[in-house]
Amino acid sequence: MKKFLTLLLILIIAPIIGGLYGILHDQLTYTIAPEYYTKFKFYQFGLMDIGNEAIFPNPRQEVCGVGFMATWWMGIPIGLILGLVGVIHSDWIKMFTITMKAILVTVIIAFLTGLIGLAYGHFILANQPKEEFANWYLPENLIDFKGFIEVGSMHNFSYIGGLIGLISGIIYSFRQKRKFLTSTV
Image 1 (cartoon, rainbow, N blue to C red):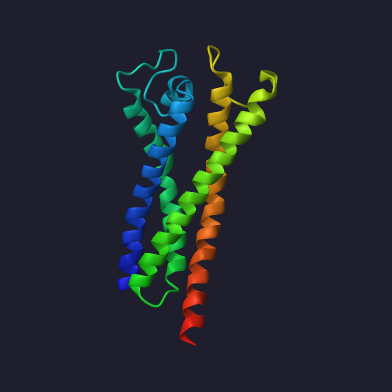
Image 2: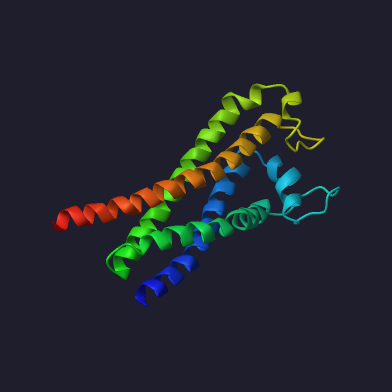
């Protein structure tokens, strides 16, 4: 019963962590390319109607909203999977502690992978001609093409990083179980 309640607690905490990750991630990417939000994300998340210029008195507040909405839901599958893997641990305290660390591993890897995406966007993608981005949404009145591409690349890589991080979190949890088993023998 305690492990079940621990799983429920993890399922409450993980989306909050996911949303906070999104807020911090998007504050960084807004700093790099505000147009990614004012000409794309604010419309995508329904904060502005298409055709109206997205101008807010304090756009960073809206960036927080976009960041939270874009990532909170990723906490549900990540928390569920890592929480279910965490059931292998001997008691609810170890389950909770190791699963929270596994979630931290996931977040760190997602962020680092996003930084790789930012570098890839900066050094590779942003130096290609605009015609190469036919499958990307590029606003007609885009001023900072390079920044927009860099941030778009970071966003895409971050989702890939979430998957890599999830796998790494699972491995971490199993290794902690094996470490505990070998130390008690």
